[in-house]
Image (cartoon, rainbow, N blue to C red):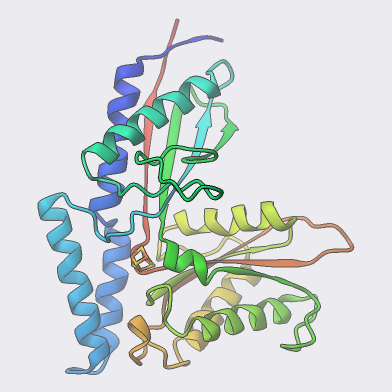
Length: 292
Ligand code: SF4
């Protein structure tokens, strides 16, 4: 089947998606920040810090300015029907990225790793990063995540078994990895964080899966009952660590834990942890298509 592609419309949709993702924190993330603030002791540094974060979220929305100066790595997950050109969609996303950078919705964030030269417009090799998949609907769905550098720096990957933290190849081992990663971060990566986890896969697919979990609604419940139980346990135990928002101490070290699992090789058991800062900037848009 072939489709009529209104390229101008798709460009405008992507540009608006970038603007909203950068400047307008999703309601469910904002609600989780408010809930975390209400759990902190009145007058505490933690309560104050979350209050400042929430003020900043409102100001960014009102002024249509970035929620944080680091507008992060631009990561897209795009679903297209059979017959739509991936290359064409990639070109449109690149054009929208360049325009969004000119409009200051995005900071120029793509640096050549050899020369150190910034491309100035957020495009480059694997920048933006676009993951495509084919689906059955006559529509294009574009999901965007802006992943801040500080939070990426404290993300990581464990190989099980791991004798250093006493973690075996089971869900208890996964639990130990996540506790270890968040303890090591000590608020760096701008807590209160949201922890996306990919169990299994290989090193690349596990991390991709971990990041995909961050698109889940903050208050959803994992469809897998064992993972749902593990998410609940980790949410309570991580918030007992006392690290708190921005590492200032408090009860809100994390806002959520989202875990997914992939099949793996018998020889490998990876636990990929995508630490996301409180600025969990992710949004999506769906563009319905007409047949040619
Ligand atoms: S980790 Fe997140 S909140 Fe912190 S500076 Fe980076 S983008 Fe901003």
